[in-house]
Image 1 (cartoon, rainbow, N blue to C red):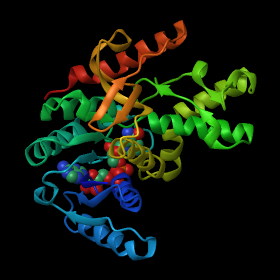
Image 2 (tube, protein in one colour; image 1 turned 90 degrees about the vertical axis):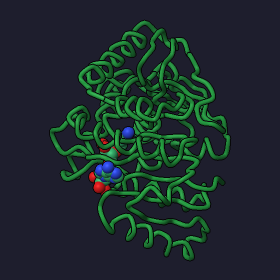
Image 3 (spheres, helix red, strand yellow; image 1 turned 90 degrees about the horizontal axis):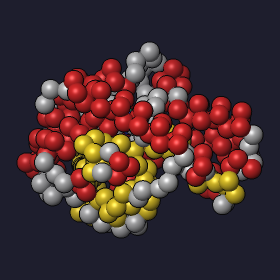
Length: 309
Ligand SMILES: NC(=O)c1ccc[n+]([C@@H]2O[C@H](COP(=O)([O-])OP(=O)(O)OC[C@H]3O[C@@H](n4cnc5c(N)ncnc54)[C@H](O)[C@@H]3O)[C@@H](O)[C@H]2O)c1
């Protein structure tokens, strides 16, 4: 358990993440910050009042200021607007860049040693904004997308095979968007290559559904985007860091030559533990997977170019 974890943005993802963090007792105090007056306070109080029932001692506090967040060990950024039907993640670019910039400035001032997990979209570009504005090293600025995209892929595979989700090992790399790269060559069921268990046409359909997993939910909800699985994914990254688990999870990380690329955030296998990013793991890719990763990188570089910081 660490002393203090801050979640910025007390909306759907942020509030659910705060609840999960408290229930897992990953910090003594979880602070929920939002610009909306009363919302973080009300949600924080409500969550704290569920502690005697759920039996956790992590204290949840809601606030509109960064005073209570000072000295945070970890900050999860979920502030920003979410997609509505028909919108792509890139449609959120300018609004969320402004929000993530101002949030990052305040975090750098109040919690200069924090590890930041970015959730706001467009994810890979927002990670870049947070790293650029805070000046934090890449070990301490990571983005959540791959864990979620992989969870969607694993859930659909488990459903198709009628087996436990626990037995599916998989990895989705690349940017958090339509160009994401599910690695079929590394997808196994308890070590058995997935290609031995599912025919290609079914596998292709699942890959396609995972790629559009976020849009499918936006279409149902109409007024916002997914938040149960996204908050669970962000909390899994926090847990790996807090408990120094050294888990290999697909995360958006700043590349400095890995996979032959530099100067952008992209989803790659990362070892997470104390201090944040411990290592980027480079795996062999097929020619098709490498080409797909390059294409995905281009889709991240494009909005980075038009960003005015
Ligand atoms: N990376 C992923 O895989 C993933 C998954 C789901 C959602 N998201 C993204 O996460 C973000 C949040 O989604 P949501 O569903 O919680 O949205 P939401 O609208 O429910 O909540 C966003 C919250 O941010 C707050 N906010 C706005 N400006 C702020 C500021 N300057 N400081 C603090 N708080 C501020 C809003 O008041 C609101 O309460 C969106 O950008 C969404 O696209 C990313």
